[in-house]
Image 1 (cartoon, rainbow, N blue to C red):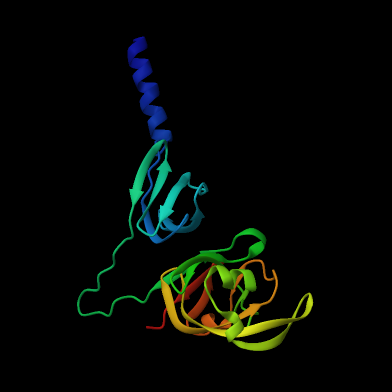
Image 2 (image 1 turned 135 degrees about the vertical axis):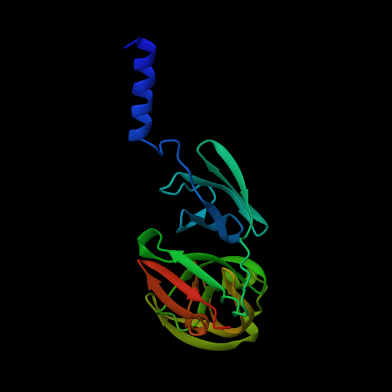
Length: 216
């Protein structure tokens, strides 16, 4: 066999052993927020922040509510939200958010309070959406006009105020008129998405992924 024929044969054998070496990915955006996005990669949903790379090798370069830019195998791609259309007179699917567990097993998700972007940590042990007074000031919430209460925390009993938020959204699921507790001081360090919101959505877990689904 000539050397040229032998090289061609070896090349074809290598291709047969590694048919997917070039790699391919089906990538769509399921949810978009500032510097974060829920990306579907070959059927697996990954909650990613800008700069993170998924196990499949997809890097989220940037994200906003208008779109996201990802990098895969040296090429950059622009993504926008996938639109679902109900057919055959079926009711459109309810809004759904999937949250993969992050550091320490916590579920974190970008959202909005009264239209302003925030970061939430899901806390099923919190009776209401909870934040500290600095968070409230940044969001323009006049918490001192709310009902003054005392709440028990891991650091002891603290002064807090019960207020009502016009709108709270986790991902694409927005709920109106949600109770919140504003703790005076710097705790909690992250805004907690508590049961005053969670009790108004359907919540379940699938293979370690927290699933929130709107009821309407």
